[in-house]
Length: 150
Image (cartoon, rainbow, N blue to C red; front, side, top):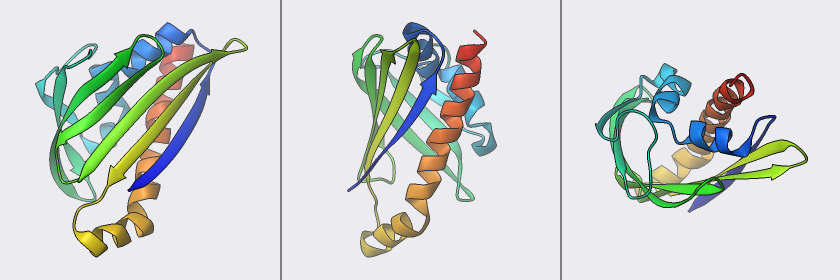
């Protein structure tokens, strides 16, 4: 299993950052190069506890579909989305927001297990972890820009 964290400091209120992080429309815009769109479940607005969303988008040149659920949520401090249906063995994304010295710190913790045995582990080491880290960092930069201009 692979684990990593991405921390982003944002000069915006905690609730604002949290809400933007839960917004399906914002997520779609933040990852627009992947052409990722919500096609089932909650497809617009804020997603909440026990709600699902099915995403379709392009990664590594392939169009992929996966279904996620918000398995935990404590507004405005954190929520967890877990993939229910996809190619990963497990994929858990914990979003945490905390306030420190007038700054909201957003912490994304990813845990995932690759499919395809040894080949999947090799892909993870060579490219997947870096790709996912950059994906989250770019998404967070987009969220930061929206939050500070909110």
